[in-house]
Length: 331
Image (cartoon, rainbow, N blue to C red; front, top):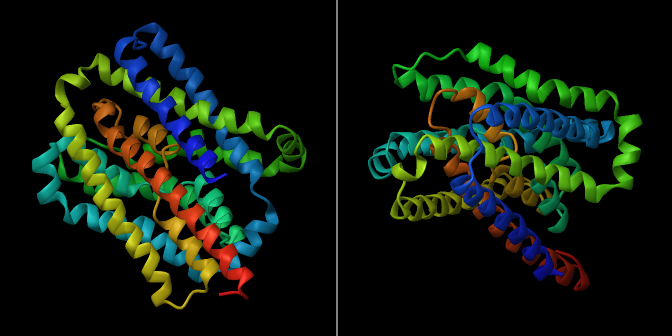
């Protein structure tokens, strides 16, 4: 079962790589790119409508009551990540260049994932209800906080004109409004979603693949691979891996130091250590309009795949550990 779960992660990783290769040799451009962009935005809106329909009112109420846990996840996601990213500027920017560092910093400003945070928390036998609320809350708040952080710490340090209010409105229309509509229509929609979970998951992953293909097509047309060498890609992968290691250690020990129980520690670890690709690329398209988008989304693509593979291994290990200790009489 563990091997199958890891293979499932690898399958999506392979599909993402295929999208990058396809965009490299057969990029969509011109009028076709405009049409593809409209279709992709419609798919994104439907995706967040489904996210809204998934979240139960009971989970919201139960999750809201656990404010200490959400406060820790929020602090790691929107304070610890950005602070470390900003402190690393003197090291990372000379190595990767300004555009890739912007992408790395943008990744630090993003909210957590939703599906994978909940899934890994469930596998590892953590507090699933809190994970549902915390991950969803992170994404909702991130629609407002991420543009503000980008405005202050990326475009605020450059000569590029940037309107944070306009960007927040665009993100709200594309992501927040469909999410709210999904919540309101949950009684009608959710029963059908339960009957076709495979199709819902395929649509979820398919939308991300569309977004990645569109983003990299534009980047390739703009000359991405003339600007990024394989040595730079390797260096970026190493930096993302080391960065994830530091964040995971903090997400592991901070809830322990604060006295959370085992289930809540697991929830903080998986919700606090990850960054979303599903929300990240659509946000990047809005926030970095006119910028080399491929360079901006490359760090989150690499970080996202590393976090999925590492979290998959850890979740399976903790699940097995929990089962063995439960058989021995508990923790």
